[in-house]
Length: 279
Image (cartoon, rainbow, N blue to C red; front, side):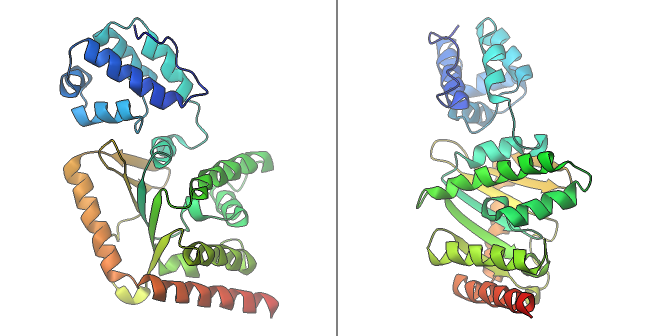
């Protein structure tokens, strides 16, 4: 059993648990690949567990305890990292997002969660759950806005987004809400906190017609890709698949407007919403 006892929940539980896994694995004389074999996962997945970029489930914790002879240490302590604020399909992606040094995202329909204002987020969640209580919507909005705390740091993570023009044109929550949301994007661009490009309708067919895409890179772990749909999502670590998604993103940036022209379009559309509101 690891020497340090239970994971301290006040000291990055998932990172601490990953550190304990690394210690226990090395004590057992196993490489990441060898530990991964009986678990039916790759060595890179074990590395991501150890780096804290992937979440250890209770089921996986039980199997690791059996293989490494750590009693029920990982079974018990992985419970500390399974209290989620997000939908099940997005939990791992949100946790990895918090550790990433760079995030690149393509959004075909909505302003990305990290960049949403409260009124915009509230309108989105209300559309998803039209019969939910106000308390339930409040909790969802709070969780989404908490993610935006990542942008409090002036330079890390690097956030580079490509937005389909439909994101600007679809009126979410009313014209005043859209004006506020787009002015917020423009402010982040002008303060040099994010890089943002708009993929215009005039670009026609492009490499990501199938849906959204998020790419995350880390200092001490392999990159990840996240793709999602209605009520579902998948965090991908297969190197070949991540490389293919990376090429897709590169093609999107090549088809999109330059950051300067994108800012001009965003501010122009925001001005139109403001004018319509006053009119």
